Image 1 (spheres, helix red, strand yellow):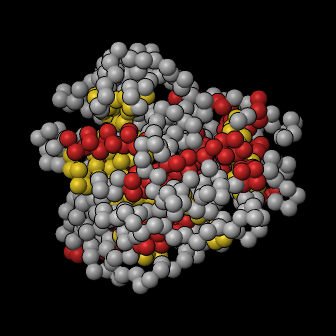
Image 2 (tube, helix red, strand yellow):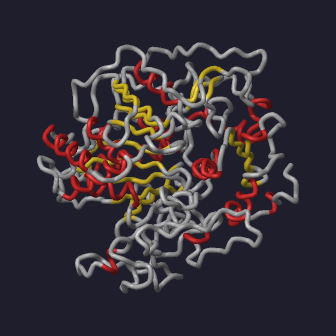
Length: 598
């Protein structure tokens, strides 16, 4: 156990876990699970007495910060991290009242405890104005929706109060957000997705001006579910593509009314975003979206996609039917998206509903293989959900999953082929290697796989576990959310980057993309998806295209056989005895050979 004079971790409340305890953890020499030989590269975190997470090869405080979302913690904002972090002024993503008082309490940030050792106080949100709180029945002033443009409200974060446009509705106060242990049963319990109101809200958090929340009940009316939409089109508009944005860590909370990064992309590229989550947070690291068959996938059951396998299947069925019933939504252009474990759920959804999904973006993930590294933070693929819940990081030695072969599933899509854009940095110790596994599996099943293996950008010291720079440009370009930009536009873009004065390639790209978005680049149509050559002016990944396609571009270089293995900073492959997770002595991992029958 931890020495009490280092940090009384089990007596720390979640509100001070990051601010008060995390700093001292970085210097622990006797962290749980660390040994004499690995103590310098091993840090163990315990977020509660019953939830244990171990991180291997953590080299710096920065890397712990990057992994925080995988553990249900809130990352502090910094210069290169300005959203989905503690200090952005918006209580969304992993921020909660327990782990980010600054964003979620409506009060001023809690001071760092005397004596130092805690994480630095959150940086202010970009733009200097911070985020604007949404008005509720307990917050009625200095908030978005009070009809006055004062305090933190600006035209950027609260259009309703600050635009001066009388056509933009000013919301009335919303019901208070439900507590984490909410058991409220509303007066109305719709079976189909219905716009959230005070009468049917229950334990869901209602969106407001820009976010529309839909609520419904599953499992024979015993379980309330909801999803949140942004940039939802009027009935008169032509059908818009849909992006299902996975958010398994937030407890089903409504996203920012500004939409965040996904909202900005939705407005520019012209798609509607659906944020999917669960009020529960009972998975690895507090992840609430349930994977199939308790995390066990094998050749006998390669695609655990039935209602019996996961509570999410009925939830997703209702969402896909909702999309199909709305003429303003394009049911033929539905995409899934996420990062890390959220992207694992994105590909799970895409494969299980391959007849309804055109493509998926996997950022910082791929496919876990049993008996091989990299090992996922929740030991998925090595341990079942029940085993990890019972034993934490000891699950390999206590109850190794001998029925597992891969996770989250095998991408058997039969006649319904999908596009999978798989992106990871080569110094991402969680994802590098797993991206290659998924590419190979996708190709084996005849899907259109597009592997983007990113080296550390020039002039950067590290990249780590994160999406590529200019992520939404890569997302739109790779999946073809809109038609690819023309060759004349690409030429203008090249000239712009060549003349840009920023220091780094991805900064030059961002600067020229702003010109493209502003309509000032010759030959360019606003909203066109960047071509592969344009995106390679931002970063230079090793690109492998199984079918020679990228977005709506065709006839590009087609891969011949397997993709080149990523040049991972940490080698990947079958266990070599060095990882803490080891195979049982009597167990041999079976060769993967899923049944060809559909």
